[in-house]
Figure 1 (cartoon, protein in one colour):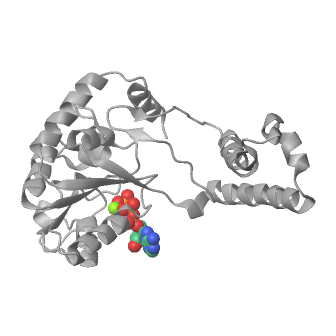
Figure 2 (spheres, helix red, strand yellow):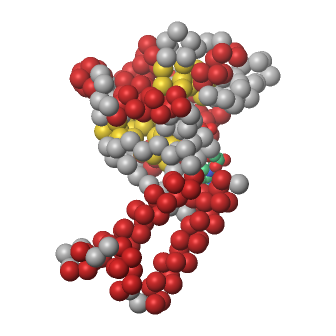
Figure 3 (tube, helix red, strand yellow):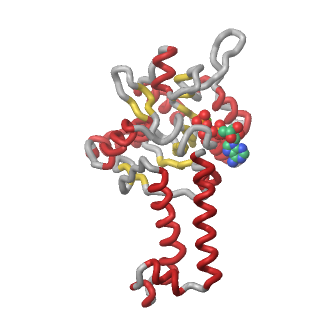
Length: 271
Ligand SMILES: Nc1ncnc2c1ncn2[C@@H]1O[C@H](COP(=O)(O)OP(=O)(O)OP(=O)(O)O)[C@@H](O)[C@H]1O
Ligand SMILES: [Mg+2]
């Protein structure tokens, strides 16, 4: 996460422009007719396309007319005629069997495997919100359910040339609820925070030090494992170390080993 990302997240968290954003959401909601979901992830290569493909496969098998949509796709190969193959769209179509034409699935396709704002600086054709919304409205009008995929992670710059655009702006404009794809195997655990349209995340936390992040995640896990079971009992009045001392030796050992295990997983992930 870069400094820019924090600033952007901060704007949302501080609630600036919330009224304006809520109005925009209402407008968008009344305009579209299809139901839908937005698939984002904790980073690139997390499995967003894979999850979108599975959702669409299930919908298609259930007889629900469904569409895939992604505003901007990077890292695509070329056909012999030089045109770009929308890789994610091809994968989703093959996985799900939906009949939707590839041409409807993504208005912006880039060759270089970098975020859309960089790809458009290299290749031209910067993303314009109007075009994204036009394509989205077309699929909403033609299908009963739309599964939309985000580019990169949650904080992804989509366009910077003249008209700054972030993934979050697109999610809000399309008025969709989010599924966040996270690789729990990478860190051993995942922390979820509630996100509401127009409101952002319920609290802001930024870590520049992986050790601090680890301690914070450990504190949450420990609280869940050690404090939650004693809530409503006199033990809940004790501090964490005192509660720990009341546990059996086996349980204490199990918890200590768990911390070592999580720590080793984190070290692997940051290596
Ligand atoms: N649950 C899973 N089981 C097996 N393979 C998976 C799973 N999730 C993802 N993959 C594989 O991992 C690779 C990356 O997944 P995917 O393309 O869905 O990531 P992504 O988040 O959409 O990436 P991008 O940011 O490039 O769009 C793919 O080869 C995919 O088949
Ligand atoms: Mg993808």
